[in-house]
Image (cartoon, rainbow, N blue to C red; front, side, top):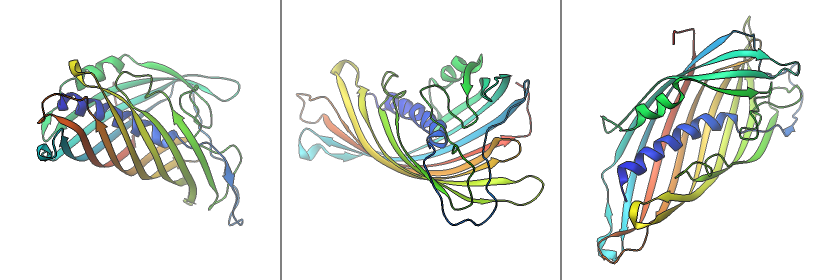
Length: 286
């Protein structure tokens, strides 16, 4: 199997995963003892407004190849990937129900593997540079693909909400595994002052699995588990994400097609650690 192709697909999966994780919590709130006045968390938009974001991801991966014969197993060189993506969200209009029609533009996407540019990343960025349109509810729901991030009712510090979420969009993209998530969210605090910022903590655990292209040899299958922790800062008054910081750990096994050559690999085990940082920028030009 072409490991560089797999690495490129895993990077694309990681980018999609990072985009989806902060949006994966549906509101099933468990209240704790009141500690302060309830706070309402809702996205808010103004027609014509443009919000700018930048995401940075660093991922370290170790792989072990198990051969058709036990003596053929070997550990592959460690890999370090770095990705930077900038994008903006333009508000086209706001509907009577509070949802908004948004146009997303990816303005920058670069990625390296062990310091070397990864082929195909420019094509991914160019595919979305012209923009794509989504409809987003005040709770963060986008169509049937991305569920709500924010709870339906006002909450207090210490309140939690949990969801069990399938993300079928990965399964509908060629070569992308399907993913199931359980997300536990907590309103950890709200800063005081002229610009209150809600601190939302998310603990995530889940599984992923599905087919991975393996070239002319046939198809491979992937199965794995992951967990992560994310701190999400949300501007209460402006109704927007200020930034996120997260860590993700994933352990995955890829079963490869059987080959007559005893030295050919039959499976590949991957261990991945990833850190992410997303920040809202003051403004930029496209």
